[in-house]
Amino acid sequence: MAQVSPGEIGAIFAPLKSSNAPGAAVLVVYKGQVAFRQGYGVTDLRTRHPIEPNTNFRLASFTKQFTATCIMLLVHDGKLHYDDHLTDIFPEFPAYGKAITIRNLLHHTSGLPDYEDLLMAKYPNTSEDRIPQILDAGVLQLLEQKSSGKFPPGSEWQYSNSGYAVLAMVVEKVSGKPFGQFLHDRIFAPLQMNNTVAYEKGKNEVPHRAYGHTKEKDSWRETDQSPTSAVLGDGGIYSSIEDLTKWDRALRRHTLLTAAEMRPALTAVKPTAHPANSNGKPISYGFGWFLDQYHGHKRMSHNGETIGFLTTIQRFPADDLTVIVLANRTDKDPEQQALKVADLYLKH
Image (cartoon, rainbow, N blue to C red; front, side):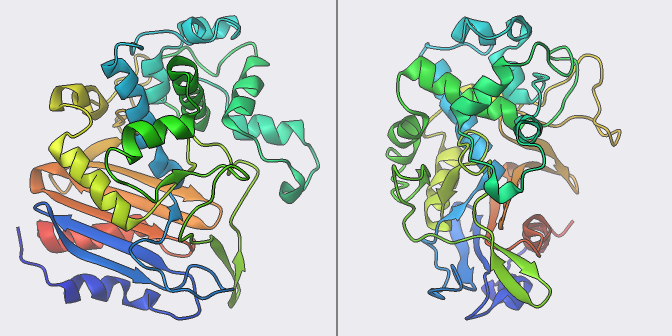
């Protein structure tokens, strides 16, 4: 592994330096030590507060690894099993839920219909800003109005926000706690991720908050919330590179779950009927993690994308390297930037 200077990493993100444009926060952890931690740009165009290590970004689908961890903690507690069926937890769920297991939901092999599509169909010819925000419980209700899934559970892989919203409701039902409270009590508080929250409008606030932005011609527009932004299980956590340093440490040290308990999360699913995705590539997803190789280096990763935000975590466990980029603008590619950083270390 190569020696890398902060200047080499900084050069990749230098175009994001600004006192009047949104930007990003960057974290590099190498061999257990913070090698680089820097903010670029501003949290919003009203205050123009600089992005700092404690600035909280909406993680979007980066959230899924936390939702999966909640399920794994309930399995650890003996309150849940990966092969439990959806109708075991929600007896009122339609018959098509009888074949869907917790493992299917974690792996994106459940075949559940896409709740975004169902939501938009519920409000035809309605502009997005006039559609009311849906919650995880509302997602479950939409799915309960359907009589079938898209394919037999376990036979195919299709990325499913619906599945992870349902997993949040599973956590609530099995634990008896609101999903956000369970996240706090079992993950955030033990790891001292003190500023990380599952954001619920009217119930809590996001400290040190970055707001999402979209570029329009030569200017920026704040685009922070959409009709699906209030769904927690698939993408509702806000966190910072300061707190995610602690998350990465917990993953490395197996603080919350043992290496053996983590193994199912880091084992790629093999669908029975269609073991490849639409591009012909083998499916490489565990529980809340994409699992593959990058230039011969084992990688566990996940991106997040939502209105105004793009995020990524790229972990190379065998190389003891983690790169996280959180952006409150959508004109850059955090994964591409993170991999440029990884290239400096991995020197294929």
